Length: 180
Image (cartoon, rainbow, N blue to C red; front, top):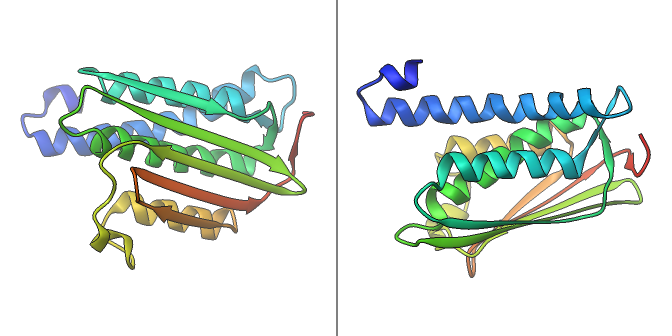
């Protein structure tokens, strides 16, 4: 309601970002409720729902292909929620900034869980990130949130690349697999 009642565009944008972060957590919880188990989340279902919702929210004027590659696997709730927030930040940033002055684009999400490690690569074919933002920590809440969640909560690493588009590569130790 605050988004609808606000006259300032910057305020609307900030409230939308908060709403999307809450939606990411909600989607993880919803996925958990619909799974057969009580303590693990189907990564594929969570990433599919989140991606579809964000594309609908941010890219109404054009066409973005959201491609998901990865086998069905399950991850514990303690890691699924922070991972959902990280995915929300990365995909939201791509949708907001990567496809400026374009009617279409592609976001590719690839993940796998092998030998106790979860690997995630999220890339877009957009304009990329200016070089000065790639070196050191920038003042972006989203970038800082991604790095902090991955390092502190997931005990992993998050690397950002920008050559032809933007690519995040994230690794963290995880107890995940095909069973719930």
